[in-house]
Image 1 (spheres, rainbow, N blue to C red):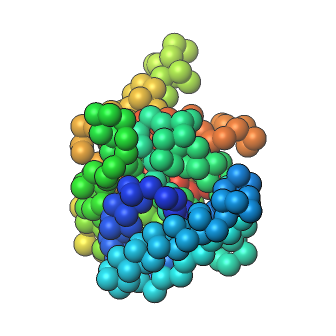
Image 2 (image 1 turned 180 degrees about the vertical axis):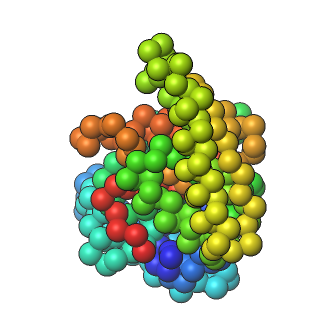
Length: 294
């Protein structure tokens, strides 16, 4: 499923922690890695490029060795250009199955570690993006990854609005179960803002219909392998309820479509996925609407 992955890297020592966290992806078929570093215009200026390249080569070699110890075939590459464009171009032209990027919680708009890069990668990517959640230290320097975010196959939360993009994302959940995921929680939130006040008298009817849909999804997953599947049906703000479930259930990984039902195509992403990548303590696997299932 994720045979070839592109890892967006930088000069941070925290990146070594991210690299050390990727062994769990081997269970989902990951075999090859590209460690990619992009030099922007300032970094690739003649005066700086020699120093930057030497530093990067040493750091990339260290990261490469760490990945090779995990059993990966690894390539390193330094390119010049705008990171978001180069990552997208290489992932598409060279047919990588997954883009991996790190980000601290609540800082996608900042320049801390992968803040701006993570936002750009998610915005532009036409491939699945795994955002590994980084941990903030008291002095706001990101230095390591939460241990539970590394165990991405233990407990997966799949929020669905039953949209076409959610159906596409579900194909990835099925593949993950087939390859050994241990537990999946299927979550649908009855959107309070759509239902209140004029449709509240039909809430029980909606719950019955959607419970049947969730049960069919549960049966499908259990046909794929030995997996525990729970169903959750909640009422309220979808973004708030999904985030609440992440905290309450100690979720390590959220898998969801990047664009949900009713959202304008030109927007960055649906409000739920946007909220999750900014505020979830768990890692998030985002499946774009225009992505082809592997």
